[in-house]
Image (cartoon, rainbow, N blue to C red; front, side):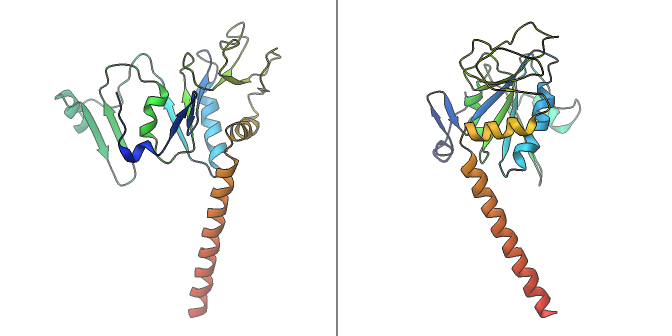
Length: 210
Protein backbone atom coordinates (compact mmCIF):
# COMPACT_ATOMS: atom_id res chain seq x y z
CA UNK A 1 0.00 0.00 0.00
CA UNK A 2 1.16 3.53 -0.77
CA UNK A 3 2.07 5.53 2.31
CA UNK A 4 2.42 9.28 2.83
CA UNK A 5 5.25 11.22 4.31
CA UNK A 6 4.58 14.33 6.38
CA UNK A 7 5.04 16.70 3.43
CA UNK A 8 2.55 14.80 1.28
CA UNK A 9 -0.12 14.70 4.00
CA UNK A 10 -0.72 18.41 3.67
CA UNK A 11 -1.22 18.30 -0.09
CA UNK A 12 -4.69 16.74 -0.06
CA UNK A 13 -7.62 15.77 2.15
CA UNK A 14 -10.20 13.00 2.19
CA UNK A 15 -13.45 14.24 3.69
CA UNK A 16 -16.75 12.32 3.58
CA UNK A 17 -15.90 10.62 0.30
CA UNK A 18 -14.68 13.90 -1.23
CA UNK A 19 -11.00 14.38 -1.92
CA UNK A 20 -8.85 17.42 -2.48
CA UNK A 21 -7.92 17.53 -5.29
CA UNK A 22 -11.25 16.10 -6.47
CA UNK A 23 -11.23 12.75 -8.25
CA UNK A 24 -13.81 12.32 -11.03
CA UNK A 25 -14.28 8.92 -12.65
CA UNK A 26 -15.30 8.84 -16.32
CA UNK A 27 -17.25 5.60 -16.70
CA UNK A 28 -19.27 3.78 -19.35
CA UNK A 29 -19.38 0.57 -21.34
CA UNK A 30 -16.49 -0.43 -23.58
CA UNK A 31 -16.64 1.57 -26.79
CA UNK A 32 -18.71 4.38 -25.27
CA UNK A 33 -15.95 6.96 -25.75
CA UNK A 34 -14.36 7.38 -22.31
CA UNK A 35 -10.85 7.99 -23.64
CA UNK A 36 -12.12 10.43 -26.27
CA UNK A 37 -14.03 12.44 -23.65
CA UNK A 38 -11.01 12.64 -21.35
CA UNK A 39 -8.77 13.56 -24.29
CA UNK A 40 -11.05 16.52 -25.09
CA UNK A 41 -11.77 17.48 -21.48
CA UNK A 42 -8.13 17.78 -20.39
CA UNK A 43 -7.22 20.76 -22.64
CA UNK A 44 -10.60 22.39 -21.93
CA UNK A 45 -9.80 22.40 -18.20
CA UNK A 46 -6.13 23.29 -18.70
CA UNK A 47 -6.93 26.40 -20.73
CA UNK A 48 -8.76 27.73 -17.68
CA UNK A 49 -5.46 27.64 -15.78
CA UNK A 50 -6.00 24.39 -13.87
CA UNK A 51 -3.63 21.44 -13.66
CA UNK A 52 -5.02 18.00 -14.52
CA UNK A 53 -3.91 14.51 -13.53
CA UNK A 54 -5.34 11.27 -14.91
CA UNK A 55 -5.55 7.62 -13.89
CA UNK A 56 -6.30 4.79 -16.32
CA UNK A 57 -7.76 1.75 -14.54
CA UNK A 58 -6.71 -1.51 -16.17
CA UNK A 59 -8.20 -4.59 -14.53
CA UNK A 60 -6.36 -6.90 -16.92
CA UNK A 61 -2.83 -5.76 -16.07
CA UNK A 62 -0.39 -3.97 -18.34
CA UNK A 63 3.24 -3.72 -19.38
CA UNK A 64 4.57 -0.19 -20.01
CA UNK A 65 8.11 -1.26 -20.80
CA UNK A 66 9.58 -2.61 -24.02
CA UNK A 67 11.34 -5.99 -23.94
CA UNK A 68 15.10 -5.59 -24.23
CA UNK A 69 15.22 -2.00 -22.93
CA UNK A 70 17.46 -1.28 -19.94
CA UNK A 71 14.56 -0.65 -17.55
CA UNK A 72 12.83 -3.83 -18.74
CA UNK A 73 16.01 -5.75 -17.98
CA UNK A 74 16.08 -4.21 -14.49
CA UNK A 75 12.51 -5.45 -13.91
CA UNK A 76 13.24 -8.90 -15.27
CA UNK A 77 16.20 -9.10 -12.88
CA UNK A 78 13.79 -8.67 -9.97
CA UNK A 79 13.60 -4.96 -9.13
CA UNK A 80 10.38 -4.12 -7.24
CA UNK A 81 10.35 -0.46 -8.29
CA UNK A 82 11.83 0.99 -11.46
CA UNK A 83 12.09 4.72 -12.10
CA UNK A 84 13.11 6.22 -15.42
CA UNK A 85 14.22 9.83 -15.04
CA UNK A 86 14.97 12.42 -17.70
CA UNK A 87 15.17 16.24 -17.75
CA UNK A 88 11.55 16.44 -18.96
CA UNK A 89 9.68 13.54 -17.33
CA UNK A 90 9.77 10.72 -14.82
CA UNK A 91 8.22 7.28 -15.23
CA UNK A 92 7.72 4.61 -12.58
CA UNK A 93 6.71 0.96 -12.56
CA UNK A 94 6.07 -0.50 -9.10
CA UNK A 95 4.91 -3.94 -8.00
CA UNK A 96 1.73 -3.91 -5.88
CA UNK A 97 -0.17 -6.66 -4.08
CA UNK A 98 -3.74 -5.45 -4.75
CA UNK A 99 -5.78 -3.14 -6.99
CA UNK A 100 -5.47 0.35 -5.51
CA UNK A 101 -8.41 2.70 -5.23
CA UNK A 102 -8.07 6.17 -6.77
CA UNK A 103 -7.75 7.97 -3.43
CA UNK A 104 -4.86 5.67 -2.48
CA UNK A 105 -2.97 6.99 -5.51
CA UNK A 106 -3.29 10.63 -4.46
CA UNK A 107 0.31 10.81 -3.12
CA UNK A 108 1.47 10.38 -6.72
CA UNK A 109 -0.34 13.58 -7.78
CA UNK A 110 1.30 16.61 -6.15
CA UNK A 111 0.35 20.03 -7.45
CA UNK A 112 -2.70 19.11 -9.53
CA UNK A 113 -6.16 20.70 -9.18
CA UNK A 114 -8.35 17.85 -10.43
CA UNK A 115 -7.85 14.16 -11.26
CA UNK A 116 -9.81 12.38 -13.99
CA UNK A 117 -9.92 8.60 -13.97
CA UNK A 118 -10.92 6.32 -16.80
CA UNK A 119 -12.83 3.50 -15.17
CA UNK A 120 -13.48 2.66 -11.50
CA UNK A 121 -17.24 2.50 -12.05
CA UNK A 122 -17.75 0.51 -8.83
CA UNK A 123 -15.79 2.86 -6.56
CA UNK A 124 -17.34 5.57 -4.37
CA UNK A 125 -15.98 8.51 -6.34
CA UNK A 126 -17.92 11.22 -8.18
CA UNK A 127 -18.71 9.96 -11.69
CA UNK A 128 -19.57 11.14 -15.16
CA UNK A 129 -21.13 8.37 -17.24
CA UNK A 130 -21.11 8.24 -21.01
CA UNK A 131 -24.34 6.58 -22.08
CA UNK A 132 -24.99 5.26 -25.57
CA UNK A 133 -28.29 3.33 -25.96
CA UNK A 134 -26.89 1.46 -28.97
CA UNK A 135 -24.38 -0.16 -26.59
CA UNK A 136 -26.48 -0.68 -23.45
CA UNK A 137 -30.19 -0.29 -22.68
CA UNK A 138 -29.82 1.87 -19.60
CA UNK A 139 -27.08 3.82 -17.78
CA UNK A 140 -24.75 1.71 -15.65
CA UNK A 141 -24.88 4.21 -12.79
CA UNK A 142 -28.58 5.13 -12.86
CA UNK A 143 -28.92 4.18 -9.17
CA UNK A 144 -25.45 5.33 -8.12
CA UNK A 145 -25.53 8.19 -5.60
CA UNK A 146 -22.07 9.26 -6.83
CA UNK A 147 -23.27 9.94 -10.39
CA UNK A 148 -22.77 13.67 -11.03
CA UNK A 149 -23.94 13.91 -14.62
CA UNK A 150 -24.67 11.93 -17.75
CA UNK A 151 -22.96 12.45 -21.11
CA UNK A 152 -25.39 11.37 -23.82
CA UNK A 153 -27.02 12.43 -27.08
CA UNK A 154 -30.19 10.54 -26.14
CA UNK A 155 -33.15 11.57 -24.01
CA UNK A 156 -32.75 9.97 -20.58
CA UNK A 157 -34.97 10.42 -17.54
CA UNK A 158 -32.45 10.80 -14.74
CA UNK A 159 -32.28 13.36 -11.95
CA UNK A 160 -28.80 14.57 -12.90
CA UNK A 161 -27.53 17.11 -15.45
CA UNK A 162 -27.22 15.71 -18.98
CA UNK A 163 -24.62 17.00 -21.46
CA UNK A 164 -24.34 16.16 -25.14
CA UNK A 165 -21.15 14.37 -26.16
CA UNK A 166 -19.87 17.48 -27.95
CA UNK A 167 -20.53 19.90 -25.07
CA UNK A 168 -17.03 19.65 -23.63
CA UNK A 169 -17.08 23.28 -22.54
CA UNK A 170 -20.28 22.66 -20.57
CA UNK A 171 -18.81 19.61 -18.85
CA UNK A 172 -15.66 21.53 -17.90
CA UNK A 173 -17.66 24.46 -16.50
CA UNK A 174 -19.88 22.03 -14.58
CA UNK A 175 -16.91 20.33 -12.90
CA UNK A 176 -15.26 23.63 -12.02
CA UNK A 177 -18.50 24.93 -10.51
CA UNK A 178 -19.42 21.68 -8.71
CA UNK A 179 -16.02 21.33 -7.04
CA UNK A 180 -15.71 25.08 -6.43
CA UNK A 181 -12.52 25.39 -8.44
CA UNK A 182 -13.46 28.89 -9.59
CA UNK A 183 -11.13 30.42 -7.00
CA UNK A 184 -8.22 28.39 -8.35
CA UNK A 185 -9.03 29.54 -11.88
CA UNK A 186 -9.03 33.19 -10.77
CA UNK A 187 -5.80 32.71 -8.82
CA UNK A 188 -4.09 31.08 -11.79
CA UNK A 189 -5.31 33.87 -14.09
CA UNK A 190 -4.02 36.52 -11.68
CA UNK A 191 -0.61 34.84 -11.52
CA UNK A 192 -0.48 34.62 -15.32
CA UNK A 193 -1.50 38.27 -15.65
CA UNK A 194 1.20 39.32 -13.18
CA UNK A 195 3.77 37.23 -15.04
CA UNK A 196 2.84 38.90 -18.32
CA UNK A 197 3.10 42.32 -16.68
CA UNK A 198 6.60 41.52 -15.40
CA UNK A 199 7.65 40.22 -18.80
CA UNK A 200 6.25 43.35 -20.45
CA UNK A 201 8.18 45.58 -18.05
CA UNK A 202 11.39 43.66 -18.74
CA UNK A 203 10.91 44.04 -22.49
CA UNK A 204 10.35 47.79 -22.12
CA UNK A 205 13.49 48.12 -19.99
CA UNK A 206 15.53 46.16 -22.52
CA UNK A 207 14.30 48.39 -25.34
CA UNK A 208 15.24 51.48 -23.32
CA UNK A 209 18.87 50.30 -23.22
CA UNK A 210 19.06 49.75 -26.96
